[in-house]
Length: 238
Image (tube, rainbow, N blue to C red):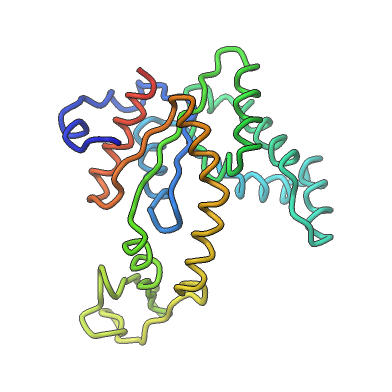
């Protein structure tokens, strides 16, 4: 497990002069992967690759892969791993991935992890994937998700447990009653956690067995979590 003392005292390479290679950021719903990914993108000048974004871009752009995906989705079916893998393979040919990239939502299954390892292993000059998992306790995640509120007028965000408004359930700026997303419930959260754990556990064990996995404490201030993620990447690449 990553140590905060290590993160506090070990030097971090000068931004954009370090080539971290492919990084898989893991974490349950609500851990803040998106925020951490954006900070790594900014620090190291590498892209974030999201399979959701890739799918939308291919479908919206009418690429051959996108046309296949649209036909599948129009039938109400799920896009296959093979098609997603092909989209990822095409994206990894782009020059902005040469120094590395942050993988978001992929590989999501053991089959995808095996495919990615084989694909990178067959690509000259490619580093293998390293995986860093952001760990937050179940109860803390539950508070983050079920406590989320938003003002429907000014779009200000709150959390009734962690960042509450001055007056319960009312926006500080305009006094409008706050709302919450229909899926920010404990029942939905529990289902999302079950799905995440069932899919991700084999992926974690895959990279752990290969010695390419670390986990960091996600219950610290954002800057400290980012520093620990960066240190984990350095150790895994050393």
